[in-house]
Amino acid sequence: MLKDLILKNRSYRRFYEEETVELETLKELVDLARLSPSARNAQPLKYFLSNSPELNEKIFPHLSWAGYLKDWAGPEKGEQPSAYIIVLNDTDISANYFCDDGIATQSILLGAVEKGLGGCIVGSLNRLQLQRELRFSDNLKIVHVIAIGKPKEEVVLEEMKEGNIKYWRDVKQTHHVPKRELKDVIV
Image 1: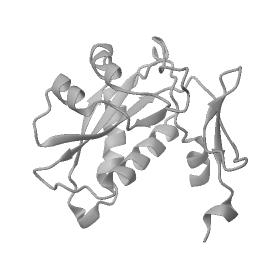
Image 2 (image 1 turned 90 degrees about the horizontal axis):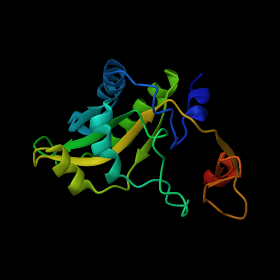
Image 3 (image 1 turned 120 degrees about the vertical axis):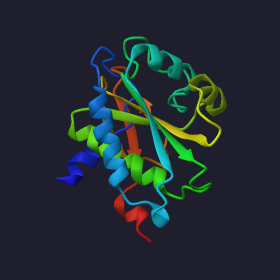
């Protein structure tokens, strides 16, 4: 059921790093994005795939993790993602990708959940340095990075209290995510 996939599709930030994600699996996930709707059918998004420890080590330092967790710098060695999909906008096709990144990324993440994986959209990153590090041509602009792997953490949804949207971790490192009630999002 779709709702079950959506409930399992959380922002996972700690992974079993030793559990590899095959390149073929990453290609299957990108194929879901490729088949998804695109504004004006322009299809300007491209994808860079990484599943090797050497390449992952080049990507990881450019990413920022979990802004609300001020005392946590991100996943430690052994808990870092086993793979990444970098979403790129090809400006030779279109300078504006409209909402394509959200549609494509949701397709990728739901596909990952279906395969027993999890992910996290990382939008806080040093795009220019990562662009240089990976030697992308000037027409390929980084939109965001999707971290992918076998989740090593539990993420639970809970009712938002007093308008507080900040996620948090308890002493067992369970990640809690407050959500607005349905009645509060329908106008």
